[in-house]
Image 1 (spheres, rainbow, N blue to C red):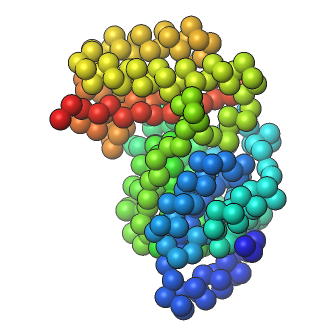
Image 2: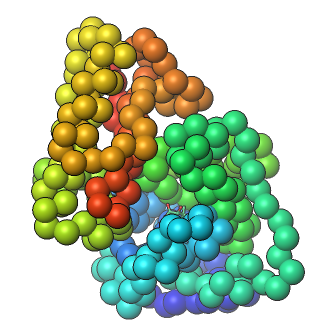
Length: 281
Ligand code: PAF
């Protein structure tokens, strides 16, 4: 598996594949890869003949005081994992290739970017939408795969691709979880041993709340119980809410497409997760 760092080389490889009638998938990442990312690659391989992974720690989606500097960077190990997973190409551009001097464009997906992560991390989704639109326009893949763990990001990318008529199929891949249920995330590496043990309470609490809601419990009380339980486990909550998974608007009663969304801090690590509330048939 080759690594390319500029758009000319990237497009030359893609042109050659297309000349052979091959479909191309893109898996955008920020590196620090784990099995969750490999499940995105596996999904991409089911959809296309060739899979390109990108690794770019996008400064535009980190706010002041966020973890841009300490975000793990380990391209060699990442490349080895991608090669083993059957990736055809790694695109790992330096910052000046993505944001050359004078760069002054911003892509904003309004509305969907306001609740949940948008409220806690102003400007974050402008950074995501801008870099994802650039990556899609650089590679013009047939398919691009994103994880459902970042549900709001996926919803925003779908909206952006529709609104801008970008000719790519966006595929959401189910969240991969550790045996104790914790959603796989590059940020899990920041947790110390004690925090890592506590972290399993996050999916456990979501699951219990989802079951209670499905079985008819009231939304306000269920959320209050879940919040109290996470706080007593040691989390500091940014939000724990029930929302429509398409509009992301908060719900005060359970409907089809209801989903729980949480962001919570353990020590200096911020974890997010989401869980569907399956309505009884
Ligand atoms: O989910 C991520 O890793 C990033 O937000 C993405 C989509 C690669 C954009 O930088």
